[in-house]
Length: 252
Image 1 (tube, helix red, strand yellow):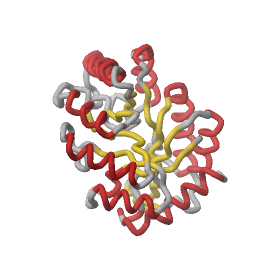
Image 2: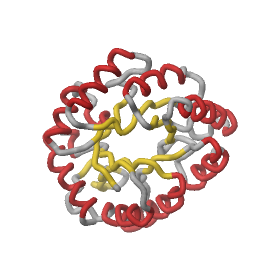
Image 3: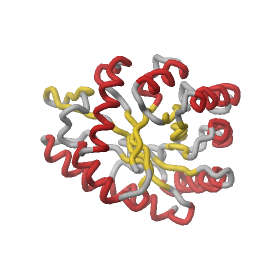
Image 4: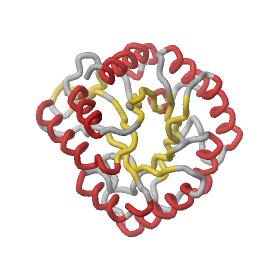
């Protein structure tokens, strides 16, 4: 089952309470809370408060978006403390930086998987440019090396060259390639406005997302479809975008 939710960093300018209220008004079901601002690493009191207000509103914590880079610069224990207090079932991390030492990143990922797993929490990399999981081959290599640790990956369409049909086709192949280790999905619509420039657009009348959602339904499984970025970063746009996402999930 695909469930609609929000990535909290979509609205960095809002407080956690404002985000919760916005999600309720928009009929979303869950939130991926960001660890860089809304629920800082190791701040147990804030994590406890955010977890409570999320539950009280009838929402679920979908994930903890930690931005942990798997490079040893951040103490994973602090990340995990917040995730546990939030009641997050999953921690999103970044797989180092592009060109980083593969074995070092894999070591930190394995430690994170084992440590979080002891608390019943999964680990998923973000399918993101500038990391070791910025391509389907790079992602597959990392997943294969940590298959026994239970590592998963999120997925999102990448902003790549070519026309919209070419981009959609390539992103669809990415999605199919990572399907065996797929967790949640980050949902956004980018449109080209001129050479080399894009803008955040509405999901209404999306050309690409019906294709991706049709594929996700073939893949099967339960996962969150988490809105990340809306037109003009406007809180007033969320109701319409959430409605468009629900429509896409029900009738791609």
